[in-house]
Image 1 (cartoon, rainbow, N blue to C red):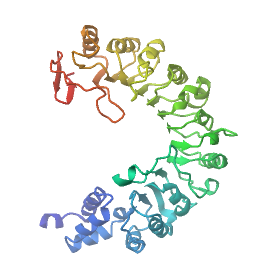
Image 2 (image 1 turned 135 degrees about the horizontal axis):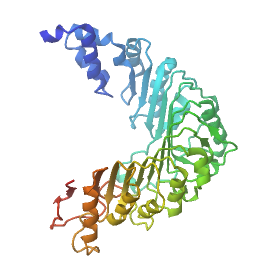
Image 3 (image 1 turned 120 degrees about the vertical axis):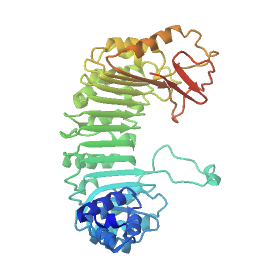
Image 4 (image 1 turned 30 degrees about the horizontal axis):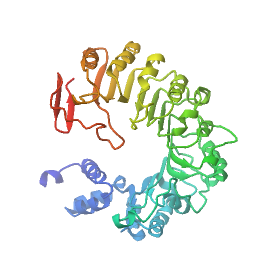
Length: 430
């Protein structure tokens, strides 16, 4: 302890700050424990504002308990988190209202709760001058096993029973907006587009599971010149392509969006043609949709295609499309759901001049001898060729299903050459 006591005050303060922040969301408890070590530590913790810049709204929280940490934060911007799904809306609102007295200092807001959008509408202030990021996710209400079979689960998120008042929300410093499981009604679409237009400094926008179908026909397209990342997930209408134009887009992520089949190269190219990093997840739809997307992003240098539903006949169209349609700048390729290593070899040969990295999850890798694949010769030849290339990094593994497990059970006792298989795990020695 004597050596620690001799540390310069600035260094001691920094060490204690790292220790407290590393234990989030229990950093206040950690600060109290460390403050009990000695008077010097307690003084150092209480006089280090950065330790008191994250507030977690929780079930056992008390609005009065926030007063001292707010004072210790010394006027610095702070983050607000509502991650305890068991807290009642009333209790959460009381704590958020206590923090709202310092709304000029709110920096990042994260709400993950079954009533997340009710909390957004009733407890998040309309004016937050220093807010940089807002992430709101409506989670599913947990039920006991005895009640699971008594309730039917809706296909769509339950609409908030209060307006979210997008047109009156003013967050001039907002850079990142993430909304998940929100019902956007036709009446709110124009207000929401107006909100986006007023916050043209957005750099990252994620809309996941935003409903309903009739809400997507906009009267205009909003230009977001600073938008670098756009993530769309589980959205049932292709009309959302006309919501936003991002002339400086870099990252485009589309997950499990059945409307891909209705996307046209014109719609995509007019708004997202500058995307250099393209990720399509669970894209089991018509091959034309995948081709349309690739046609619309000629600058793509990193492409990730992830198919989880390997029962779909369209899940294995990626290799054929990439053979026919060459991306001139493709440097990094990741495909989940490769059905044929020889076809993958043809893809790599078509893009060999630009590729620096290839990562694949292959269906036929290490299949048991009694499977439908009788001849391993062509597959092994392609695998040997891919592994022998020195111009790019090559990584290969088994295809995964929607739950993250191996798609097909592998109990092959006869290990292929240069493959090490053991029990439920299999790795390829590269």
